[in-house]
Length: 479
Image (cartoon, rainbow, N blue to C red; front, side, top):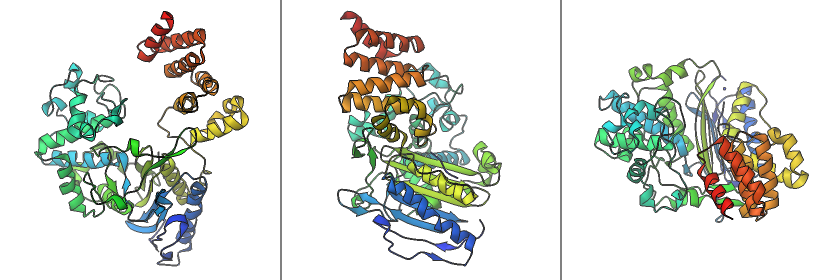
C-alpha cells in the first residue's frame, strides 16, 4: 500500500466515464507549464494499469485543497456496463480507522475518556486475564495483542453476527497474541473494540458519533456509514482476479460496516476529511494535536515526504498520500484488488517529485502464475523478486506461492503443479512453518505419505503448536 510531492494551484477537474470518454474538457486556470506538464503525465500512468486490466476507479490530485485533476475510469458494474463516475461510492476499507481515531481523540478532549484508561473499564468479560492491561492507547496503536476477527467461516455468518456488538462478544473468548504493549500487530478487532468504547463513553452509537462529529460537521454529503438503502445505483461493485486469473465479484467478501472499515464515500469527501484532519482544528484542537505523537511525527516529516492512509480487501483499494509541507494530495479509489490504488498513487507521487515512476506490473500472484505456466518452476525460482514487485509491502511474500499452490490444488485439481509451487515456497522461505504445512497437504493429496509426514514434521519443528500439522500427522500415522 502506499503513495508519495509544486507551486500554486491551477487546474480544474477532468471528469471522465468508462473508457476514458470525457464528459467535460480538461481546463487550467493559468499557463503554468510546470503544473500543466505534470498533470498531462498522470493520464499515461493510469492508462498503463488500465491496459493491464487491473484498475478501474477514480484518481484525485489537489494542491492546497484545490483540485488539479479528478477523473473516473472503468466500470462500476461490469455486468450492467455501468461506468464509474466522480459520484460513484466506493468502500474505503480501513480509512474508517482514522474516523474512529478522531472520535476517540475528541472524547479525550471532552474529558469523557483518557488514553490510559483500560479496555475493561468499558467492556468486561474477557477470558484472557492479560486483557486487563490493555489500554485505549494500545488499541489505537495496534499494540494490544488482539488480532483480526475475520477467521474461518466469518463470511458465512448472518449479517447480525457481523455487527459491532456481536464481534465484541466473540472477542471475549480470544487469546491475545502477546502481552499488551510488548509488541505490535495490525488489529482490525482492536478498532472494533474502540468503537464499543466510544459507545459506552458517549452514550450514543458509534455510527451516530461519527455522523454528528465528523460527517455533519464537515458537510460530507457523499459519505455513508451503515444505511445504504437507496444507494444501490451509486455503489461500485468490487472485482478481483482469482489466483488462477479469473475475474470475480467481491460480494462474498463484502462486510458489514464497522469501526475498522466499510464506510462508503467519494474521493472529494475523503479529501475534505483528511485535509481537515491534517491542517485545521475543526475536528481536533491544536492542543490535542500538539500532544499526539502521530501529529508530532507528521510535523517532523522531511520536506517532500508524504503521510499516507489506505484501505483494501478483495475487490477494493483506497489510498491518500499527503505531502505535508506542500499541502499536496493524491487520492486513488479502485474497485479492484489491492495494491493497485497504492501503486498508482506512488507513481503519481514519484512524478510530482521529479522521479521516474515504476513501470506498471501485474499483481504478484498473476505474474508468477503466468510465468510458471509459460516458463516453468526454475524461472520462478530465479526471478521471484522481480516477478513480485506488485505486492502489498506489509504482507509476507510466502503468501504469494501459498495462495497459488492452493488454487492449483483445489481450484484446478492439479496436485502436481501445487506440489511444485509449495516445494519452491519451502526453498524460498524455509523458516516459515506454514510453507511446510501446505507442502505436506499437497503431498498428502498426491498420495506421497512419506513425503507428507516429513513436511508436516518440519512444520512442527518450526511451530510446535501448529494445529493443522498436528492433526494431519495424527491421521497419517493411523493409516
